[in-house]
Length: 50
Image (cartoon, rainbow, N blue to C red):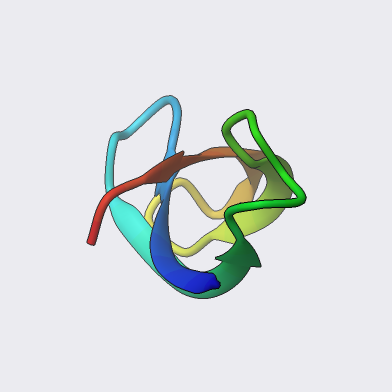
C-alpha cells in the first residue's frame, strides 16, 4: 500500500515536497537531501504527514 507523505525542511520547517512511499517495505521515516527554495540551499528533509 502506497502512502502520500510530505517532506519538511529541517532548519526552516517549511513543507516543500510531497512524494509516495511503500509503507510495508520502508518501516522508518524517510530522510533525503533536497533543495529548499526558502533557505536557498540543499538541506535535509524529513517525512511528515500531509
